[in-house]
Image 1 (tube, rainbow over the protein chains, first blue to last red):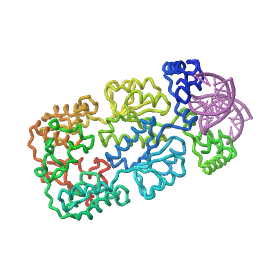
Image 2 (tube, rainbow over the protein chains, first blue to last red):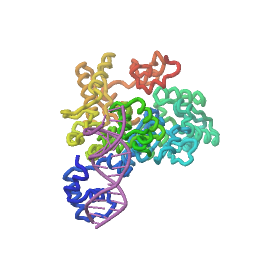
Image 3 (cartoon, rainbow over the protein chains, first blue to last red):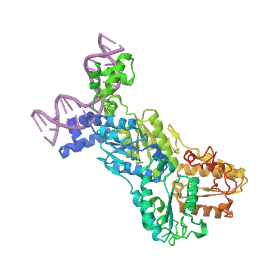
Image 4 (cartoon, chains in turn brown, red, yellow, green):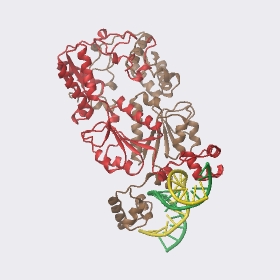
Length: 288
Length: 288
DNA sequence: TTGAAAGCGCTAACAG
DNA sequence: CTGTTAGCGCTTTCAA
């Protein structure tokens, strides 16, 4: 592997000139810049990340802490956040180091070893053991998920309360009088996972406000879990169960069967602008 | 941040002693080892990753190249591999740097900059543009997915041909006379993605061998895509469509409805040892 | 606009 | 068993 000294020698300049030509941190004459660029190309030079980190105290790496429990839900949302973080980081010239440990020691290892310039913590819980550590280490950090005490912290999350509220609004607006929320898995609810609590909160508040019967049923992320939850939901709200393929309307645009019964919910049709991007490519050819 | 020199001073030993106490690369008396450990604890010392990389030429980081197209399928398998790589790496003391770019430049950036000790490439295709680069860079690499020319390469993959073959064997063994494969998305098949080609190959070969009618239908990873594919499959094999909740048997153990009709396929029951681990936690309480 | 040189923090000979 | 010290490759003053 060629070093910056090799480049300097070949270009007939000093190492500092090469360094500055690379970083642009001080003016370099067009002529020398050209010769340096040539030398770099000829040698296939690429700066040694470790040496750079040592000398500059920057790694250009961001640490992403995504607990295994989040990954294992196999949730599309989690994946989107992960790829989003990686993509965004790259667009700023940073790479991403991913760890799936959520213990304090792991986070400390990343931060203390100067492996990363900053941290992104996913699946933050209301009393997250990782939080006290953030003060101790010097690293800037942003949390995905909202803990109980957000003092001095940068937090981002989906607005789950609004999601719950809007869903009820939508259904009540269509004349439904009893609604059920197939909520987060029981484990998440029991440990008071923030997203679970908040969507339930929004759901309940709006249901009470608009006067519809309502219930919340925990729901595991699996086929039998969902079946179980649906059955329980129908039991609890006392609605008659009348789901059959003939009562599920077709989308007027693409004639795909709606997964919901009764009036079609536009959001679930792949035609809808609010449908997940992944659905776009799945539109039947007869679709506009 | 305290340095190794600070530790050495506090412990009253030389830096090399601290270094060796840390790495265990040469014998240290129990007494000094103890004092070094104390000093490290007192100072909260943690070695500077960049400095270590520079001096030792090792980063203890593995580069994982997972193309966006693989991540976007939102496939549980892809996720399992990613978390598997991260977990396995950690168990060897390595961290994982994840990039979602699949272009040559990105791989070169990782390798040339000495950012990583080795590479894992996911979603390798039969003529993958990243492969020529692997010779150029000095990094050891393992591929997940099998290219056309595997000469000198370390490749790992699921045995898709066997999967296709076994599925047909299983169904034919249960007396079915016409079978359809809901295959990979059309895009994957069109670009001859290896896994798509191989599962189809195994499926066809076994179908021919055992003399059952068969067809392959591309299938997008979405609700409407699957519905479309199922309909097309029934059309093509000319079977009568008779899927209703009453014809789907219950599991004898847990009485969960089988997602398949006719004779229950044990594999799809959460009771089955071969069911995905994530299903375990979803078993109804009445299940053994 | 460019050079020379002093570190950055750690590893690994070499020398006891 | 332990200490001394020369680098590892780059950044960044300080000086010209």
